[in-house]
Amino acid sequence: MKNIRIIVPVIACLMLCLYVVGCGNATGGGGGGGGGTSTYTLTVTVTPDATWGTVEANPNLSNWTYTSGTTVELTATGLGGKTFSSWEGDATGASSSIPVNMTANKSIKAYFRAATTNRFILSIIVTPEGAGTVEVNPLQANYLDGDFVALSAEASSSAYIFDHWSGSLETTSSRETITMNDTKEVTAVFKNRYLLTVAVTPGGWGTVEPWGGTFTDGTVVSLTPTAIGSHAFHQWSGDLTGEANPGSITMNGNKNITAEFTTISISGHVSGGTGTVNAGIGAFTNSDFTGMFTFEVFVSPGAAFDYTLHDLPNGTYYVGGWRDNDGSGFDIGPTSGDLWGNYQITSYTGTPIIVNGSNATGKNFVFDHTM
Image (cartoon, rainbow, N blue to C red; front, side, top):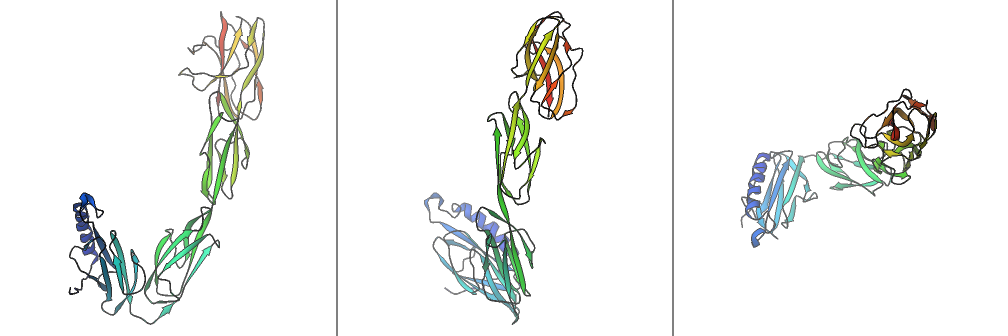
């Protein structure tokens, strides 16, 4: 078959791609739909543009769609004093003529450069040493002025991640192309990846968001603890300490953090009457007061209830008073005992609440805790 020289402009290539999409649908997407012979499309782009060179295909088909297994010979020729530089994509190397086996849809770039005898050296550095590798295409001792060189950076293990290029190339994409119009030195910068391990104690008393993970060196991670049921966040331990909620930690190494939760308890006595105080704690579930803590207290009318709250984490508290067991709002309001403020204490002894209603038996003593 006679070879036909085809100039592939960028616009023509785009139109061809649109045409190919239609062909792909008609032939089962180039993968063998409907039991017929599979066909695949070949897309070739000339860079910088079609005035720099041409690419011949043999065999040449007007729609660049080939039967599976066909070997297509591509030949690149420069125009107007330009010369071929290299291939990129589904074909690589610096030879101006290459075979392409059509076993799938293929997309190839043909790079051209100005004809010259000037040659430049490309130096590649990886930092930290051993953190990754850089694939150079084409790989040569030196390059002619105008040569295009494809660079691809990849981390050597999960302990690192590519971050950016520096020097003669300054981008953050791990795959880039550099033009050799001078001596170039490019550094591939990788960053460490560190593991954050989060635990909760006692187990089941709360959660932390995020629940650990892997983070790039220098990342500041915000940690938010959330208590479950009637418990409350108390403090951090391990590589993060203190009571801040949320807490934050800078990932400059592997970190192990524990969120410690506590159960608030109450003790007290009744004067001027009879009664008992149960030290157990529960969550108040009435829709108006969800999230408040409750303690069951049995006190005769007219008595004074003197109480102490134990194991309080930092936060703001409000002593709310008495409510019915069924959560139906105030039954007997306190004459004193409101408690506001931020505290760094483990217990609080409240001013006695005077029970001045007719019947306080079986009521819930309620207080609100907001971290």
